[in-house]
Length: 172
Image (cartoon, rainbow, N blue to C red; front, side, top):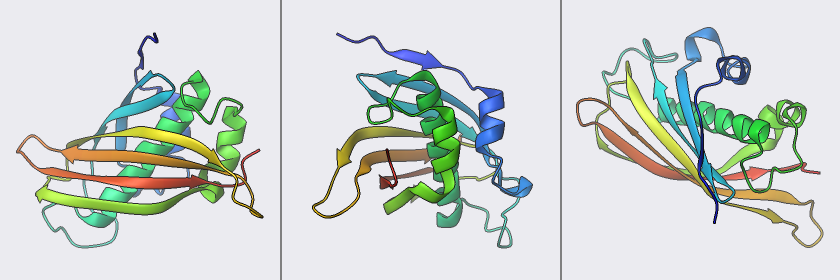
């Protein structure tokens, strides 16, 4: 039997994870990470005061959903590596994460459904790793295959949810 663990936002880690983003594209403001049985999840808060690429639509759009997912996922992986929480990343150090963050953690599939419009100025989200498996295709380089799910909501009943598949390449 395993015991779930919880970690509040690591402000220094969050700042470093968001380092590659332009200042006006840093949407993730906090992340509460939980883990159990080798899988981890994050419950997050976001704020998008102004869209980084389009006039105000009045609602969260697909581009912002993807950027918010990336930030949530990068933080969750970094925190999971730091704390030794996630299957498949047991041998990784934070230096490994920083080296792999941008070039080697790829979204292989991304799908989402908007149920009701979400106010992008203040909203919440969560994501979870459903599975992580090492794959070594015949004649190919090994990689990690991760199935994830995410969801966003706001105080007004807005809702969006979806799934994403990650491929982490160039793994040791």
